[in-house]
Amino acid sequence: MTELILGPAGSPGTELTVETDAGAVVRRSVLPGGIRVLTEAMPGQRSVAVGAWVAVGSRDETDGHHGSTHFLEHLLFKGTPSRDAMQIASAFDAVGGEANAATGKEHTCYFARVLDADLPMAVEVITDMVTSAVLDADEFASEREVILEEIAMNEDDPGDVAHERFSAQVFGDHALGRPIGGTPQTIRAVPREAVLEHYRRTYVPSELVVTAAGSVDHDALCAQVLAAVRSGGWSLDPAAGPAPRRRAGEIPPASGIPTTPSTLTVHRRTEQANVLLGGLGLPAGDARRFDLAVLNAVLGGSMSSRLFQEVREKRGLAYAVYSFSGGFADAGMFGLYAGCAPGKVEQVVDLLEEQWRLLATEPIGNEELARGIGQVCGQLVLGLEDNGSRMSRLGRTEISTGELLTVTETLERVRAVRAEDVRALASDLLERPRHLTVVGPFEEAFRGQGRLETERAA
Image (cartoon, rainbow, N blue to C red; front, side):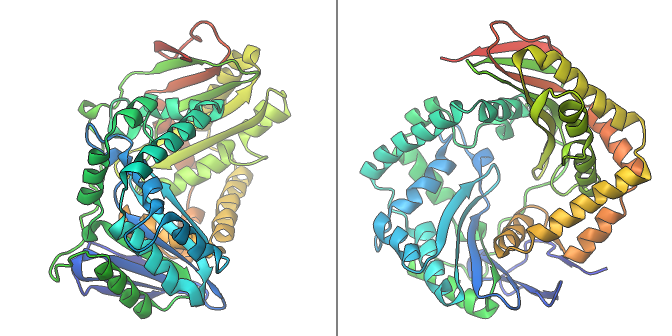
């Protein structure tokens, strides 16, 4: 078995090197200040994907700061003392590169993909943004309106509304239940001083992880990161280590996770109803995550899956139908989705429940198991042909579990999944409080799983 166990966060000077698949080499270094740098050198490539990760997401926001993490993602592209917004954008355009950012519930990432010769430029610009953002008052006011438009755009998409409300049902009052981008109310209320305080408190060396995959020299990248961070004015304590990873384990009900089922009906004037059914899933590092991947493939991950065949192919009740999951450090989410005619919601919900229950009570056959395993393995390998995916895998792993499996080891674990493992997990998930979200042109609450709630558009 070959795997890279990143282990504890480590201290400055910590070094790990592992040869993985097809000649690729993963290296990890802890720099002064606790900055972590991970690379995966991939032979035969001329490009490199690089990301600067801050291990802080929307769940880390305190009262009065909700929406600040996503607000910062926007503001960091607006300028530093040495570059304005146009210079940041044109730096990547001039070399045919791509640059963007993403905010999650547990991290924020600023990333780029460029030719290997342009990596020093990408590191310099992204690090300048992370360390030296101005957060100009006029830009802040302007970007507030942009974010409000983004939220309004999402609210106009009934699918986005369904997934956002479903997440809030599953996690309740816990921070994971809050929308990543905030709400119109929190974005209008948050002052620049709160966002600036959030920036200064969370964008620190111990939370920074830099990852790169493709045509990359690890030692050169470490030197570039150190030079750029120091140029940005960060003080690096030679003895300081990285921030500890989040503690995994069960979230106690007292932290706000609902313990009873619920149904939420959201009124929207749409031609189609969006339906979500599910509840708590598995944390990102749970050993059963490989069972969950196969379960998803069998239940709703492809055209041959049970949901697709029963709901769409046999009965023509939906165009889109699938199962999904998402994992965080200490919790997860699992659900089933379908988009259908408003008059067919009850029938579709019954079918979603039926197929989930069948999977929980009757072990799948060898042919179906083999097909599910094959799908997971194929998608994994195809996805990692892209250096951006490998860069992201390094960052997510370093921030969450600290355990980076090689592709070969991951495939072995997926292929070790048994039919009984899938059944047992489906049963476990089914026994947890289930929540139903229905978005569509309904004047009254849809029949429910338990507690009934309704929400009408303002």
